[in-house]
Length: 394
Image 1 (cartoon, rainbow, N blue to C red):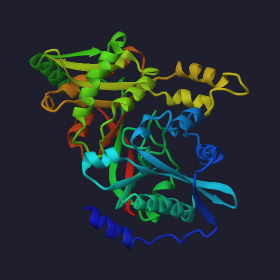
Image 2 (image 1 turned 180 degrees about the vertical axis):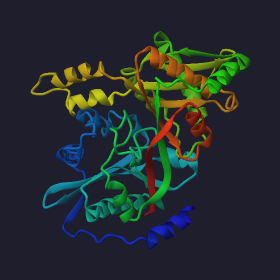
Image 3 (image 1 turned 90 degrees about the vertical axis):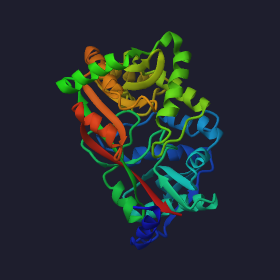
Image 4 (image 1 turned 45 degrees about the vertical axis):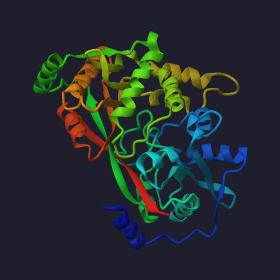
């Protein structure tokens, strides 16, 4: 469906009445910012699948002095209050790099959290839309925190399992809130489950090994002693591999380096693989332990009363991690359809099994990336979660 048709669909969608007793205002003080971060704990209280973020990390993420995304992007944070009590939040986002890269005039929203109240949700979406309209945008899309390079989307199917690291999670009522407030689907993202105990199909393994020999593909773990050099090689592949993908926006050097330093703390070298052909790095895959197991143990705090109890709980919980997330697999154009993806999948499965991991999640993939989705299915992957990006006119 084209955007014009979607705008008409939005116009035809019954909108909830405005909640006259709800005030939506920009975040202006340190107390407001703290309330913005802490509101999640109210929404998810009692939800056994929710993984509390580290409050310190969330505050740093929203701090322009600490998050390099703010070197080019801008955000307005909003809180919804009823009778002085916070009942919702949202971020309105301007990502000029996305619009420059795609030739669009699009605003974004993200970090949406709300009680189960359509009037509150409408007030939040209207506030974000108004801010985007003031920036000169014609529509907005999200949730994005603050682009597809970070956490994004709404979970719409697959609520029975907790989220893996860096993947979204939300209450079951969120999709209905979005749609009641006139937002429509822009794109679905899929998550796949794969067990390391189930051997890959013999035919797939045989073809992959044949292609490995014929194409001269050499797969190796990253050399952590040459981390900066390996990072430069991965950057080239990253920006080349996804440049034509829906929603992709290339990271700046500073963004990429910042994220790499954060990921370095949890990466397992044997699961960060580079594929080379005649000495040229042409593909890479990154699979990381599901650090959400450790984050959940901390319950949002590294310290309690000055003692590092949360950190200790994280360290102990990290020893029990047995699941992984294959977070990215990219191949330079010109080297696709040569079986390199299957080779990387096979080598990752082999390494994961040898390290004692039971399996995990491959996420996310675009619903219409048929080449990638078929490859995952051929390896025994099972689609088990669906996430959605929404949009609306502003």
